[in-house]
Image (cartoon, rainbow, N blue to C red; front, side, top):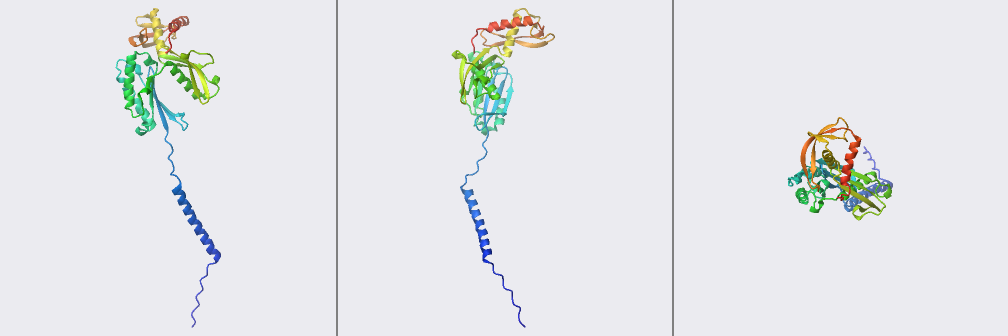
Amino acid sequence: MREPTKPLSPRPSRGRCRLCGLCLGSALLAIVVSTLVHLLSPPPQPAPSPRFSVIIDGGSTGTRAHVFSLGPDGRPDLARSAVMRVSPGLSSFAADTARAGESLRPLLEFAKEKVGGEGAAAATEVRLMATAGLRLLEEGVREAILVSCRNALRASGFRFEDSWAKVIPGSDEGIYAWIAANYALGTLGGDPHKTIGIIELGGASAQLTFVSDEVLPLELSTNFTFGETTYTLYSNSFLNFGQNAAQDSYHQILKSRGSSKNGTLVDPCAPKGYSHKRKVLARTSGASRSNLENQYVDNGSGNYKKCRSSSMIMMQEGKGKKYM
């Protein structure tokens, strides 16, 4: 009996072999190229960490820590910035200057948390700018408060140099306020006449700053350049004309005119029916320090003529005083 014949295995065609070889070669080439790209390409860079700057504003009624987040171009990103305030102000430590630095600690802890902890703080500058509250103090007391603050800032973990903690002139205070207002409004970098002037009312001083085309006294004039535009600024500061200091001076005038009786002060500038217990501060003629005098009840009489008359006396007393 004949054995069945085994079917012959089909031989692959030359076209199919070429196709398989082409696919295999392409796959190998892709692997080689991918490997070379991986080996030769630089490793991916992590996203840049946000940069920060910390400014401590030492005002007369309180101290604020402003934590500014800086964009890639170095400009502050106001939407990501943060602020914290503590009171009282640094000038309140005139009788115990060593405690001034301690008052900054909550602000420094707040700032450290916002910038990302100890490591980020070491790369972040912190500066202290004190204003009219300290300008009112005697020089020795003022410097002792600054020494206490510098000690606290030096130990804070932030980047700090002693020259970064100082009392700034009132004219600089006005210029900074002018820059901040116009930066927020988007009017910096263009026509100077489209900027706005500012009146900044602080606790112990008031500042007036605006662009001027007139020839100004050197002590009241500053050139400020932003981008390709230079602004000639008039900036003046009026010490003792901040909200709290002016109110204290005004109440002293009322007392001198006989408006105070049995611990009650009749205030013609306050509306009728208004009554408020407050403390009045008596300032020396040199405005070098303040002492707590007494408490009194402030009752309003709503008398416009007397209000205007008393206010004009206060304004005349300040007329001709040297700017600070």
